Image (tube, rainbow, N blue to C red):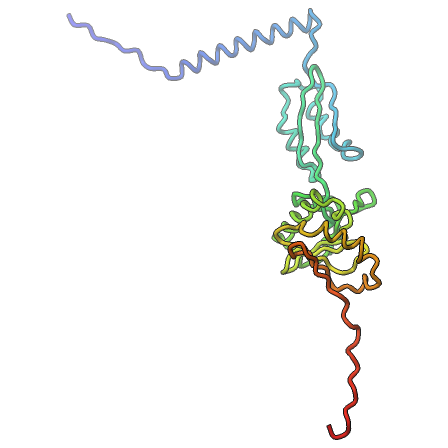
Length: 266
């Protein structure tokens, strides 16, 4: 008599089901041990009872506190919705980044990275702060009157040119802080970036390729000679784009030379 071989049907889901049951049992056991430890051995619960904010001050710090506390207080330190908190905080235009630190047993620390204003942007609707990553921040008021350069020329405010000016200003701030601190206005012309500084009405033509070119030489020239010149206010331009040379546009005559009267018949 022949026996037929019966194969057991395959169950591809079975390993996942076993793993899930094991995880549930382990999780339940861990929670039970934690409950016993908290109740009978004085182990503190890992729930958020205080939120500390650093990296900003004043109204901004209070604003982040108001955002964070409803989303975190009373929540488990390692199980609250951190991504929701991050999205809410970073939706503020002045916030560049957020670092979340969990400090057991009950403290959450939020470290704010603020966007730094780099330029003033003068628009028909008002004057705004512009950050070094191109984000338009707050409108200018008495509390944020930073001494930074202005971009007021409408032709210099297209997206493409503003990116160039932001890069130029950021490099000057980082590499030539003294010169950047004296900048009154930046604009962009066909020849490249043009700067205006305090105490000098003549435009400074800067290099497109190396924005820093000749700036230290110019500062020495300004202190030693130009600042003492009686024609300082009449200079037409100062060109820093040349290699190790500075071209100075001397004043033009204010009126054409008088013509001599010609003899009769000529």
